[in-house]
Length: 354
Ligand code: GLY
Image (tube, rainbow, N blue to C red):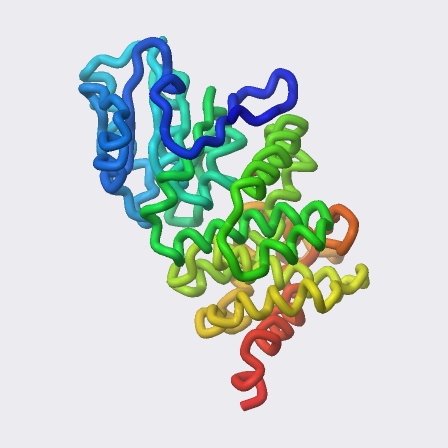
């Protein structure tokens, strides 16, 4: 099924059960694929270009140094300017492959075939490519939209349940950005992730990134849950998966919004949110470990304080509201201290009481 996207949208979006070779590029192409998916790709009758790269890239190797051998390989083939690169894998692989495609010959076309729910629901759409620097995640990259996104749900069958559940949080984020409490509550219930949810999330994101491709305004809303989430993810030493950290960040953002005087959230949303997140409580780092990471947020602004004293940091925060779209506020990182404490007490009341 081809999803409806805004007129002129850079990426054609397909949501399928099984891979379809007709959606591969028409002309010359090559592949960068996750090695773990090679058998599934071949079993599905998909072609393997002779210069394919089957790679295994752990999260900690999301670095520029990982793509340099790929670029050298393409130059050695040689891959020409009119060729298309196909990325088959999760967010780390697709972010790096898109980055390599943006760099090779100053930019060649690429397609993304996301194989994790997290990548299908968020990472693969919108043209953000990137790698990590020692100073932080995704600090280098380019906006280079893929020509085509092909999400095949059969690839999800091989995912461990924890990794599948990880992607659910980006879907719940989409509902909270729009203030859609009923949709969020439905996705918080037990039961499998449903395809129409992915479809709805992709359609929403396509609209946002089409209106604001460079994240100058509206696209920032897609960072809901990511401010505290990124800090918790890093402070857990990456024990928390990205989606899990975003789930915690979503609860934190609801509590921050209430703290900032916005409309309180109904128990019908907060209770299932807390119930789903409670098993992650042991990995929620204490506040002193989070504060420096919040202040180093990629979107932080550093400037002189009101009396010209050393720098004062402000971070862009996205605050959800029940029944209405989320709003953006620039706040000091310290604004998260009380929501962080409330989050801990909700998730782990016995530890806080002890
Ligand atoms: N993952 C947020 C964005 O694509 O802007």
